[in-house]
Amino acid sequence: MKTCKNCGKCGPHCLAKWLLIVGGLNWGLVGLLDYNLVESLFGAWGWLVTLIYVLVGLSAVLMLIEGKCGSCKK
Image (cartoon, rainbow, N blue to C red):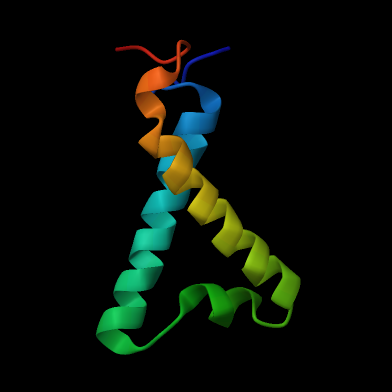
């Protein structure tokens, strides 16, 4: 599997990293300003909001098992 030029991680881990950044920023906005950016952008499509939340959650699980990936650089 190819590694990302920027972070040295495999594709799934690179995507997971970015999803976690977006998810963390969204939760920061919810906590500080009571503003949910994901729902503001995609609220008309409830299934898409749910999918985004599930992908962020799966990204967290993937990052937990990051050390077991043989494709990522150490």
